[in-house]
Figure 1 (tube, rainbow, N blue to C red):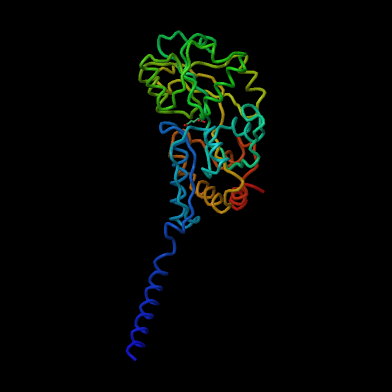
Figure 2 (tube, rainbow, N blue to C red):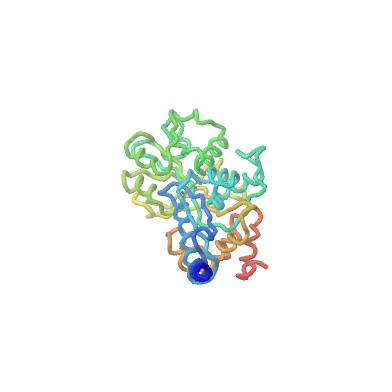
Length: 331
Ligand code: GLU
């Protein structure tokens, strides 16, 4: 009898605990799906893109517009590294330049023989002019002046490094044409320019950008015009390049509009990433565009229509397609 009572009490307590547990755990940390976004250096705009997406996902889940997904967007080496992290499934989503999105999918340029057919598009973001910033007193005023100078071509894994090398090849040269080249990251290059350790650096980045400001406002470096015959041929012949203008007054030393080639920053994924997660990401951003566009000045002119049409040369991810159909952005 005694033991029966004890058992009843114990099982009653168990049932109570189970009930409490069930009520309190609709979404524990373990149950919540998670995504990781590959971005760029901590002073670049890709880092802002990734973290703005995470913020929209939190906001959207709180507003009941989409499921909750834990989102992280740590710094990375940039476009090329993000593509390789996507391929190895070490990130779920990545920010990449439109030129490298194209080449990775098609197995062209540096992806020759190594295509990435599972690459899928979510949307494009801001325009990224390719900047060459020259040190004050370096004597560099145009592309051809770079030969014989100390040039930072960017870290391996960055989009600017790959694009810079493409431009060098297009001019029929190699990096041997520079007196020295360095592989500093986007967060190190402006400091090196101002310390007279390099004469110029290349950076594909949205406008405005803190590291370009450090080199221009900080030590009067200038952004050089790249409207040359070779680059004109390149832009005319490729769907992933466009002409861009860095307007007069953007930085202290921008005393006139500077014309240069540009790409679009794009947000991409792998075909195997869960449709529901991509659907939640895409919906979160597009449902909250008025806020998204305030998170960086380079996002100010973005709208959902252009973001789903421009700069995308690979198939849409099925989760993105579902979101766009539901949002009326796709037939
Ligand atoms: N476009 C650069 C890259 O692909 C990154 C620019 C940024 O960090 O905003 O690596």
